[in-house]
Length: 120
Length: 108
Image: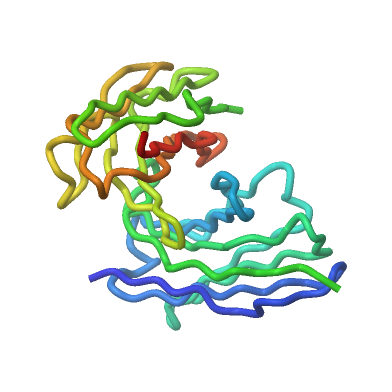
């Protein structure tokens, strides 16, 4: 059974850096093709893809946010970490991590999400 | 960059009716098109992948179709638990992932 869980701060001040951790079990991020993505959702709005990391350590970023994002993995700890710099109130929303078993496969499993509020 | 446009934004229907949701891509996405269902306070749930394949445990009343740039999700005979927001999603070389803006299926 695959599980993912997001953790990190739920309240962040503008201009600060957000660090979120996705802890997972039931799969290995060293298996060929496996990848993990981060997706966010502002309150009442649609899903927005943020970043991706692949089994071979390749990374991809949403082009509009690329300068602010860093995604890394620790295969031995079964963690994926997303860092977002220079937060603004518009970054408020629920942040999800999700597992995909193949490069072009859909997200089969999702974490429960973590609501992050950016406010002074 | 591939942009997905979903329509309508809201679909008002009664239980037992059929729902037809549309997802249009700005360029061909081959068959790497998926649909998710999201209920309030929950993570999205995968329903359909590769255009028309049902994910594990998804009832047969859900079906997907289409090709290249035009795709549909059909829900035959809506059940009370089907009222939710539905998103289409594509996977490609670039961007690796994009989502549509969502269609809310609400009770009429």
